[in-house]
Structures are given as C-alpha cells and as structure tokens.
Length: 84
Image (tube, rainbow, N blue to C red; front, side, top):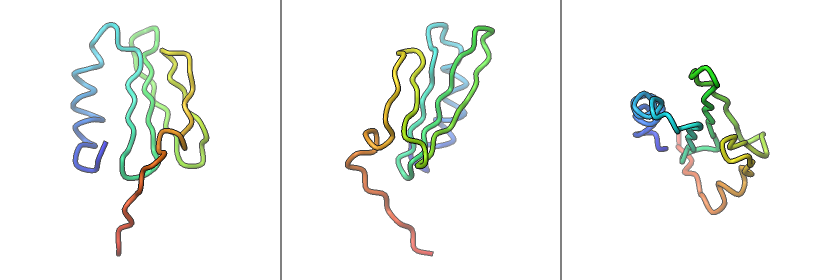
C-alpha cells in the first residue's frame, strides 16, 4: 500500500472485505517502508491485527499455515528518502 492508498486499504476496503465469509486473513504490505499488518479473523468473527516491522524477520499467514520473511517480501524494493 502506498501513502495515497493507506486509508482506503486499511479502513474502507477492509470494511467491505471483512464480511466475506471465506476471508480469513487480510494482509497490508507498505510500499514506502518495511511494515506489514496481518489481520486474522477469529472464530467469533472478530478481527485481530498484528504489525511487523524492520526488526522482525518473519510474519505469519495463518490461513496458509506459512511464514514469510520480511527481507524476501521487500527484495529489490528501493525506498525513497524524504529530505526534510
């Protein structure tokens, strides 16, 4: 997700998607910094969110029973450095 789509992806789209019965995970991958948010649908239908940052090496995708490595997800990505 980019800075411009962050609100749309994390709020508006999620509100629409979370009611899909088969959706078990909603994963947001930031395109401007190393940041991943994994939302997991609980048995009672509520959603729980966990965030993973540069200091984390891996993050889970529970519905698939796997973990991905953050460095692999961001391989080849160059981040722009804003001048202040």
